Length: 470
Length: 166
Image (tube, rainbow over all chains, first blue to last red; front, side, top):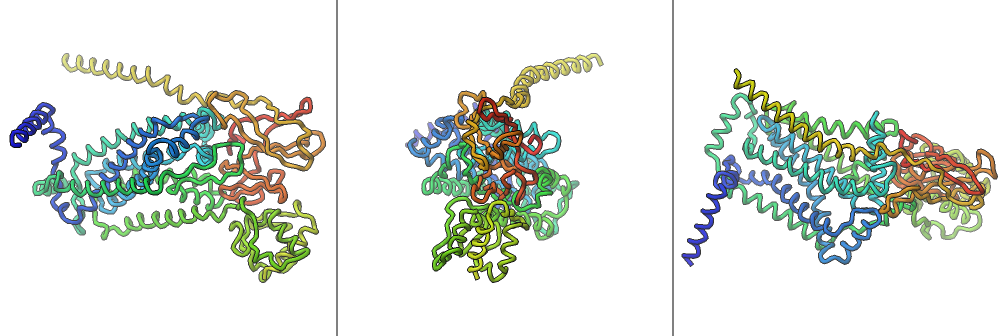
């Protein structure tokens, strides 16, 4: 037993010496970090490694998927069906890749929020923030391109929508749109390009950026927990920080154990979700000629989807091009505009608002995107029996017209119908017969005029029906 | 002095060679990546059916096959258009619309009884002649050129229409 241990010790020291591990890996692992990280506040410092763990999950599951996925429009859908239903553990791997993607978006945002609120982006760690910002953009680009590789109806129309948005850019808009679809229309060349972008181009950038980010994290050292009333003064910061590290603790294992705990937790959550819920069901096949579509982005982009429906149309091109540009520029300016001064959040009320406002807005927009009240309903048109019971003659005919003339697509009666226009459950208590007739015939307030598509008799019957809705 | 200028010469040589490698490798791949920009949109009239298949006053969905699709394009070799037969004959006989909403390109849906097109993404609405009836769209539906030849309706399918390239 003892000789075995001696042998393994000798092996370890041979490896360590010949591979120079002492000066490289071990030195990095044992780099000193502020002593305060021993205290519970150390739990805030784990978000970066949890994100890294999730990235590794994505790489591993992504390689697995790439072994079966066929990135050609005539086969992609079938290969995904195979992965989801027939391949051994295919549904679990696809599920992990799906939930891992969501987890990565969440963890990147949490990490960024923590770094921002702790003021850790300030001198001398500005470049950490800048590389991190690029990693955020790369993560979002991965989330978007990955969602398109799920080559179903939603994916197909998402590409079209992306191209239409790109086309709004001034001057180069048309070129951008054609580059997005890799040609004049979504076709054979589109999917292979998105595939190459998703599995080669962006991941290569992410690997490089993670390398820079981690190098800077180790080289600059982990920021000490902020203390109110102790602002960053670039002139003396480095000397003070060196003093902090002299009293510091080694990252491995004194701080790293927390990273390991949280990273494990994150991966377990993703694996459990993947095993319990599985990969998201594929939508209808990506048939460009099937116009009965209801395209929706994955949940993390629903907020932006809602923005595009809710802003005034005249400002749209400005928002589509300007909002991402503004967010991008703001991200990069943060460490350059505020490199010094107070780090503690209690002394930076504007910083708290800068975090809280976007999060509240994003949450509200996501809820709006989930409900999409602006969308006319195209399928399942029917009025509940409670709304049509006891109707006869012209009123009965009017209730049928309410469905066939697509009133139902935008208006609710007794809880059934679209929510684009006003609820008409009790419309007769608000509007007279004349007002109803007028509104249907001439439209207005976002409603089309129906004078050209209903006969006077039909209009009369429709109004008779609506007049029963007191 | 001599030493320094020699070093400078060598470093410039090395940098120049490296840039040369980058150019040599980079130029073809950049050209390859930008290639879609140099391919003109197809402008060949494609038959979509007999004129008699389109009753006057009706709007019907037709499928159009890309004249030269890639072999692996699958379903994406096809696109759809809305064809509205307005009159028995003459230059106003047909209106051919792209299915793409002029807001952000989602497929609009024809409601034959209500005579409106509805968009499922952000709620754009168009009348049967393609003009805007409600929602975010700022311009009428994109129209495609058409011609009648030998009793066949032919349409020109020019790639994805955008706000810049209707």
